[in-house]
Length: 243
Image (cartoon, rainbow, N blue to C red; front, top):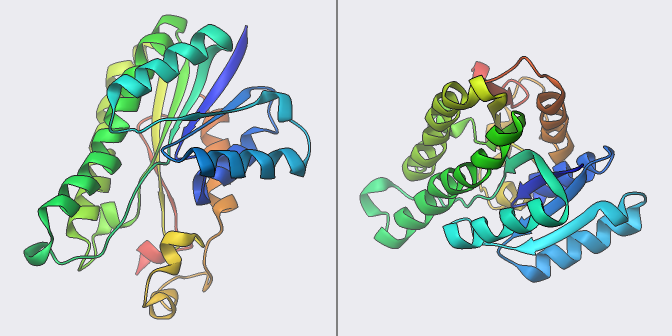
């Protein structure tokens, strides 16, 4: 039976780097995103890069819509086979003091970053528990473990993923399903490009450089292979959290 690795938010940044890394395995790689255009772009890019084109798939899906996720998961199970890995990389960020944060911004951050991952985890749990194996990787942030002024809501949404990860690891572990979280720091993506104080933050990074999406992909690859690791937070921040 063929196996599929699902990457929600796989069309950009960290998600697309993880997709590229996963194509080096024998599994099928399924890219899921709200934007069909972004999916087409990354699929074209990955196909032009080399091997694995026949194992690459893309589906438009909004993580805030449980019915869309359910349909995608069912389609993958029917057409490819078992789901071996789920990566939750879909996320949004916005800087705003809590006192002045608009209601719609608060709801969007929580809905996408936290509830979205709850939705996707719930959708894959049944097939993973039935097959008695599976690896779930949530993408959080060092902001979720250490906080930052102006990002209270974003921090709360990512902190919630830590609780989800640790609790779900206990719920699903007896059926062979592992759940871990990667907490990236300053990674060179579109999200980081919007920050106005990158240079100031860089002075707090022990390695004195921005991380690259491939640095996070390294951690994701490790967690897929590390079959005795579950319920853990893997920090990939170049030492930012040390200070």
